[in-house]
Image (cartoon, rainbow, N blue to C red; front, side, top):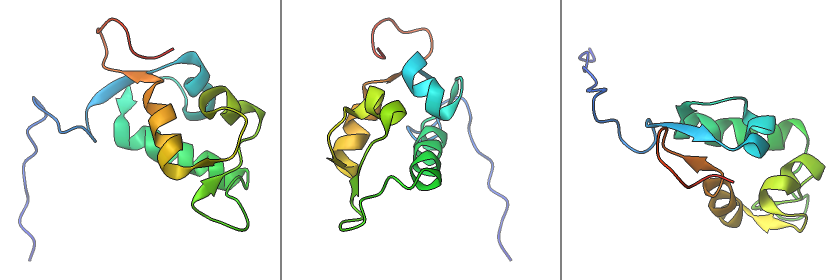
Length: 99
């Protein structure tokens, strides 16, 4: 049987850290703060819901007008997309980051 593990929320890892999102990214994932992992999940939900994965290469995204405000209008790899999304997030209370 699995043991119950207590999570130390005082120092969350990067995936669980609460972050703020830019207004452009909020159009896709909703208002922050939310965990970084939740942002990633919601971006992928948006991509799947709007059928934005390239038919010939599932590793690439063909952005629509809304996603283009985050990643640009040209086809991007999922790795390029992640880098672009990261430009639209920041830790709450910190200056800079985001757009």
